[in-house]
Amino acid sequence: MKLIDSAFGIHERALTLRSQRMEILSRNIANADTPNFKAQDVDFKSSLEGVQSGRTLKATHSGHVQSLNNSGGGTLIYTVPINSSADGNTVELSVEQAKYGKAAAQYQATLRFLEGDISAIRKVLRGD
Image 1 (tube, rainbow, N blue to C red):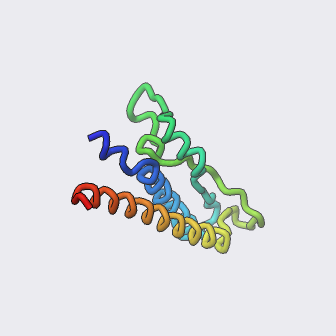
Image 2 (tube, rainbow, N blue to C red):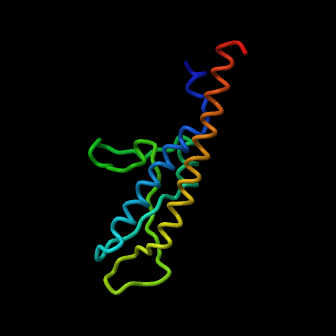
């Protein structure tokens, strides 16, 4: 079923990364008042390039690497704040909310691409 596996192309992997990014951004927003919480984000571009090229981390023991990369996920990076806070928290609520809104729009766009691919496959199978 190589044809079905590759039918969705990059959109399937992009949807996984976008979903992961939204989870991380929502965690940042939820911890906006937590002292010493360090905001994170996903380096989407390098993560998607890594998934496309098939690069994965190598470990000598399955318990050594507890990374999101093993499940096709993204590379986590720490966000550098524009304004520093006294309690050591690097979450800037307005910035994180803006990032989340943009990520949600990108997630929806990726879903629309996948819906188009699924619709095309259905038409082919029906013979339309």
